[in-house]
Amino acid sequence: MITRVGNWIGKHLMLTLGILVLLYMYIPNFIVALMSFNDSSESRNLYQFQSFTWDNWLNPCDPQGMCESLRVSISIGLLATLAATIIGTLAAFALVRHRFEGRSTMNLVLFLPMATPEIVMGSSLLALFVAAGFGGQLGFWTVLIAHIMFCISFVVVTVRSRLAGLDSNLEKAASDLYANEWQTFWRITFPLVFPGILSAALLAFSLSFDDFIITNLNSGTTVTFPMFVWGAAQRGVPMQVNVIGTLMFLLALGIVIGGEVLNRRRAKGKASAF
Amino acid sequence: MEALQRVFGRNTAYLLIGPAAIWLAVFFLFPMLSLLTTSLSDPSGTPITGYTLTWRVQNYIEALGDYWPYMMRSLLYAGIATLMCLVLGYVLAYAIAFKAGRWKTVMLVLVIAPFFTSFLVRTLSWKLILADNGFIVNTLQTLHILGEDGRLLATPFAVIMGLTYNFLPFTILPLYTSLEKIDPKLNEAAADLYASPFQRFTKVVWPLSLPGVVGGTLLTFIPATGDYINASLLGSPNTQMVGNKIQQLFTTAGDYPHASALSVILMVLIVGMVLFYVRRAGTEELL
Image (tube, rainbow over all chains, first blue to last red; front, side):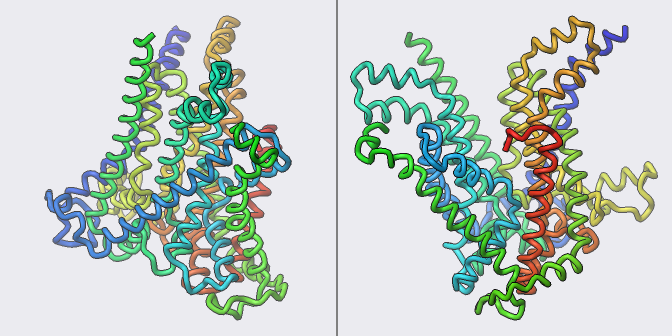
């Protein structure tokens, strides 16, 4: 009897508890989606559901400065993603495919930014900018530099794990079939690593788009979306912030699910071709 | 790659690693040095004119003397939040790794998906959930768990809850990676040898998942210690953490030397604790 109860617990209780934890992680997203339909015209300071409206979704750019901050965040996010993905992918190739002096030092240096609290990274960059005489010119470019810096490590880790799991026999087979090095790289290696590069880029963009602590210290008067939300939190949050939050969530979910579906379809297509 | 190799000879590796090495040296390592010199500079300068290095060690003594309660609070809150993340994260990671079957990928995506909604927006929504006239507080008051004027918002509970919520995925992903690698046959073998479910967990699953436990708790504890967003949005002046102070000293007070000293102390404390913890857990190879 006791073992049967134990088995049942082993079978279902863990899954039930796991799903409960997952639901807990979604509580804020439900609230954010709900609040995106909240009519807050009565009182903006009262962060509470008052009455239903479509207004926030129809006029997302109503709050002054919000869409400008969104544009700033997207530009910085795209530029930082592009730079960090290129720099990080090159580094990942070097670390997986080459043995060179200083390799283990480089591994450590790449690990450190992930193990440093953001407040320390942000304040040290600020100290550098001020010491170098750029204290008065903090803004778009200093934020971009910071974002590229903390994204590189995450790109390297993501691309490296994809590259390390690659079957090198595929490349050997290509060269056996008289492909030259460039052909082997562009037709075999790169397409196989590409999903890793893509997920690294997605990760980099979301890290950059969401960063607050480092940005806040190095942005001068430039306002990114998280900084807009932070500023609004002191005065009363416009409900449109929740519209943007919900849109971002749906967009990311769409990209991830779309990628997965595409992957499966491609795998199926390949299987039926044989 | 080999074509490059031929053109550049043995320098290919350095050409590939170069941009990352330079960027991190200039904008990560060098700033750390800057932080160190600023922390030893004369506090009478301003952010625009810069600070002169006078090897003023008193900055450290003053920073610690004034702000040690914030430091202790940070370590305490982050420590509790990390423990809670470990319990919640272990349950979910275990369920995904061993019980989810063909829903594994879906559940893993669902773990990451909420985090695409801005961190600040989600943290603000906890303000609503824990509000004084909210559902949770009212229920707890009806059940007499909370007093008539008891509240959740602006208490240490709210801050620790916020930290737990925000850093949970950082615990789950390394735990999952570790658990997923465990061969289910080991568990079956233990069962064949009459191990109870509890023994199977303590003698087989838990020891094998230790790398994930160490990795996950570190990835949670480190950012949680430096965080000040949860303390600002969900806490009160009495629940401020060291991040709040560092940020205030930099931005509103403009006292860079003391702020830098406090940053350096935080970094040293964290590195020290991490090394000690990793040694104790016997997982040095992780670093």
